[in-house]
Length: 356
Image 1 (cartoon, rainbow, N blue to C red):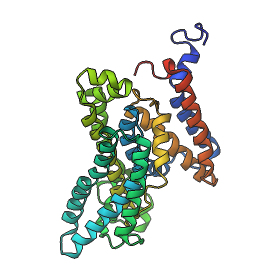
Image 2: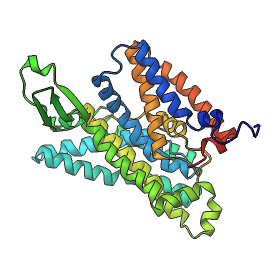
Image 3: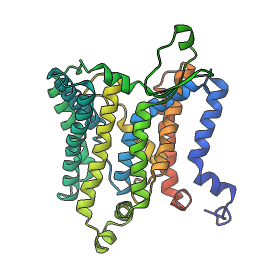
Image 4: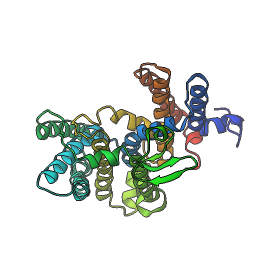
């Protein structure tokens, strides 16, 4: 590229560095002009809910991609853990446990079990040098098959009502000029209920707490520094004394952990456990990470960038729904944006990743 074009703070440099943010703002502007009620509070709430599962899967995927790997199993690990969580929860209710304790213990148990697929992925990649694509694609099939066996090819039903209340509830309920309620929707006459404003979905709020914690780990701790070092140059990381094998195993366990959170979130939102719960989200999660600025070659990426990538996909999908367009058109646009992101990383990495 012409050195004059690479002059610091030139318009082309700024556009190249912040193109995802520019694209995000452009989506808002276009859909707000041609759509109906796109800037309504209800539509924003819907976008937060729709983005939650993709954000969870993409957060775990970010760690993997930064190390130069990829996790193709997250979608069906999510489905597997959705079934496992639902099965445990229904069993706890049947033995007489209260809904509150059953929900809490089922979530904790599922999060523990959910580390196992990641542990196996990490062991295959780190210890046996199996390419990440092959190792995680194998887990993709194993997780899906196990989920179907556990559920007998039928979605798990009979989850307690509390699961749905948490999964479809909101942090705040506001009736302008009258009341502000927390967690539980207030009992109001139908005439007033129509004016009740729902603020911050529970599943988004809970998920964002985990995302922020791991964003801090990635950007501010030695663990995060080692993650970038392994993706940047694995041989140099080994010479620097980093236990690369153990670290990679932890990375894939983090990805599996977030897939488990996605499965729990799905089960509580739809009050059912499905083996294919995350099948449509695996590609979206990878695309969100790449669009967000992570390099498939490893060494770069941020959770903040992944969040922007998630919003780009979510806004595109909700915008098409708002316009009454078939959502499969989303894949065309996302595919074009993905190819553009990869080309930017391939030919202009000094622009895209400068300052990371």
